[in-house]
Length: 188
Image 1 (cartoon, rainbow, N blue to C red):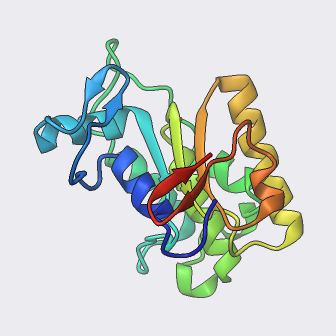
Image 2: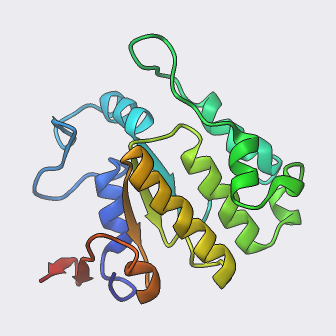
Image 3: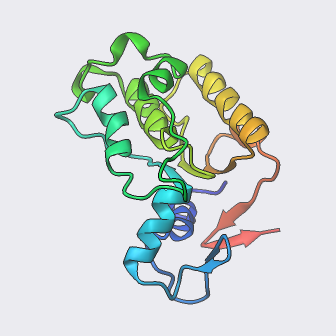
């Protein structure tokens, strides 16, 4: 948590290897990201991290189902046996309450529905780490509670690590730990 401009989104981008720190080091699962070549960071990202971006990053010409499915097409890497434990895009869209809107393009969806498509897309590869930037910021209370329930179940059943940025104290209370950022620094 923290005020706008405090560095919350930047922290998620650093943790996900999408941007490089100006100082310090970042470690992910025993691998230092700060001194790796981009292809190695990309591989770690694909194998371990799901992102819920604040701006959703949906492709406007694709349907909801295609926007979720594209994350599977981008899965360039697999685990040692040649297969990944992947979720069904249709199942995820039903889980987030969009089963009847799979064939809708982003322009045909509300902002909250677009956000739920982005959440489904972030989960389709069943990442061990989910980095979520304001994942409930555009949702009504009912859908916020639904998404928080999904996140809670993923954490308890699949031991998924979820790092979530939020301005909403009610959403923050769902976490095991809350960190406050002010001017790029974690406050005790």
